[in-house]
Length: 255
Ligand SMILES: Nc1ncnc2c1ncn2[C@@H]1O[C@H](COP(=O)(O)OP(=O)(O)OP(=O)(O)O)[C@@H](O)[C@H]1O
Ligand SMILES: [Mg+2]
Image 1 (cartoon, rainbow, N blue to C red):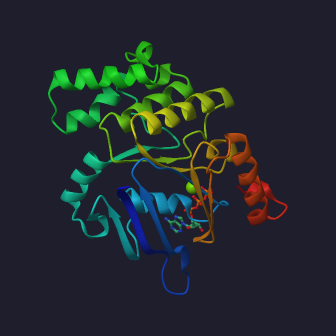
Image 2 (image 1 turned 180 degrees about the vertical axis):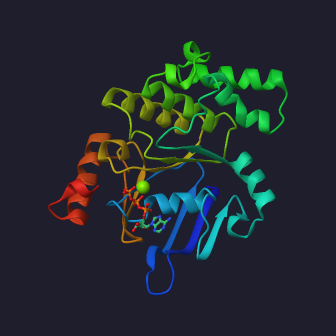
């Protein structure tokens, strides 16, 4: 299997002398093509920091992050922009859709930036919209959409460029249970049918149970790893709850 992401001994410190937070403390992990990996951990454990370092939004204090054979900790800003456009798809918790653009325009933007042909763009936007069942809302502006619709438009925008790695931070954080289930089923088929590689941060055991493997982070370190194997989603969910109880003690709400 092809290695898509390799995180090697990264450290991330915030603050300065006398007042340092070790947000990430010697983290290493590997993600292979077609994997669907979840990241869980208590609040403040470093999940968002890890995702931000991988997505090149933030930079590491030490260590290497290799995505598709490029060490992104060494790329200069122009090369980094190109890399981001070509290799990564982001899904943010708060959607980050542009309010003055329609769903169609929001999705098309990533392709417009890459200067693709208008006819190509149109074909790709319609294809992904069909896949995520948002064809009817392509002409709507974000304020005219429900939370679940916005999240699906944000997902469409993330995958329309066919990125090597999709990064999602709490993608179901703002959704009700029905919309969450729908989105996760899309993720599942995106992963199965299109062989997309997904790395998803979540504090929610139900959401996490859709992944094939989960890395648990505590105090900036990898605490343990769970692999779904042949378990049903329900069985995997129960195992996830066990680990949450173990990490969080009696107070599983910290997740
Ligand atoms: N820009 C920053 N400056 C200083 N400290 C920060 C910064 N960003 C994060 N931290 C600290 O780093 C640690 C990890 O934060 P992070 O946001 O990665 O946690 P998280 O696991 O995503 O938590 P949550 O589940 O609450 O979203 C925390 O102690 C946090 O206070
Ligand atoms: Mg976070």
